[in-house]
Amino acid sequence: MLEFSHKSNTLEQTEYSYSLQDVTEPHLYRLLYNYSEVPKIPFNHRHVPMRPPDQIFITDTTFRDGQQAREPYTVEQIVQLYKFMHELGGPNGIIRQCEFFLYSHRDRAAVDACRALGYDFPEITGWIRAKKEDFQLVKDMGIAETGILASCSDYHIFKKLHMTRRQALDQFLGVVKDALAVGVKPRMHLEDITRADFYGFVLPLAFELHKLMEESGIEIKLRACDTLGYGISYPGVALPRSVPGIAYGLWHYGRFPSHLLEWHGHNDFHKAVVNAGTAWLYGIGAVNCTLLGIGERTGNTPLEAMVFEYAALRGTTDGMNTRMVTEIAEYYRKELNYNVPPMMPLVGEDFNVTRAGIHADGLLKDEEIYNIFDTEALLNRPVRVLINQTSGAAGLVHWIQTHFGMRTGSGLDKRDPRLAPILSWIHDEYEHGRVTAVGDEELERIIARLSPELYTQLTGATQPTQDAAE
Image (cartoon, rainbow, N blue to C red; front, side, top):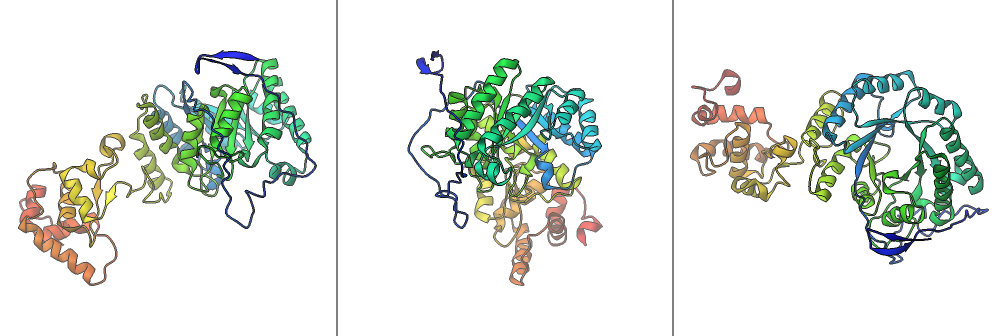
């Protein structure tokens, strides 16, 4: 079949046929995935076109995949995090859906409590076992869409399910028919797609699912799951590791529109964010994430990272409230007792903090020199300096300006003689073996004791407080 494409303004072939290759032995791509070696990245130098969808979205699996990597959230915690996501995603629903377990009473209570808030976004979706009674549960709870596992690599089909490809395909199609029979929209999780035979199993499954979608009139989604983080974004990489190839194959050969395609990545090789952005660029409509990237092993694609990737690719936040990212991180630290890595981009305590004197000197002149963007405006996180042996006078001046709320250029100079005893104290501390940074409260006490005139100017007090002077 030929159709005229208004995206490329050319006639394009749109009908393809790939038959199931029901092999007798599993195809494990041992040239790439030799278990005793680092996985190899194959190139065939075939390039597919970028085709970003008209609309791209973020979906969340914090309460499903993310919750498998930590102790279960309470209902109250789920509700609060769901509120945060609603606020962060903004009125246009850029954070479009949020995925929930439905197994336990607590799971269902959390769904009911979140649904009672009356938000349009994120839409609540489910994740269930492939059993008829679970589909009825989804239907009875009034949830329109649910995720269903469809393992698609021979590692899973042969070694985990102990099936042939034909048996797996038939089972997956039977499960989808059960969902459609009760009017539930299935979202097929194509597990381990970056080790799967794309033309011998993934596309034949996609073709059959597309037929069921046309026959039933109910949309079916495909979630491409990079279960072990093997996906590669480089142009010219060969399948099964090529993220552009997977994205292009699902919409071009499989004929699934972008809004029914989703990317779910893991971060085993530090590629979760770039792979998710690549999926968007090559035609997948939604990227599936978790808050702070919390998930099995190395975690999932961090939701907050894709908020900023969206803004970078589209040139607008489209109404997202990016300052909520900081509130979410603080909630994890203070209420959930989660140890957020201090250097973690956007959410770590040190992500916009410098200790180097030469960087602090640049920040004093213009913070844009050493800060990624206006972190105070976009994240409610002013750039900070921590004081250690390398901070120098510039670092101390910047710390004072930030800590005491002074405007940049307010008159305090790094050559101010009142700084000398404080700098001498810092030098002596590290000369005598100190290895930790000087804390904020500690440094305030030192200023009060060693430079009381400066302290009075900074605080407006006529004399140092007793606590500060001690």
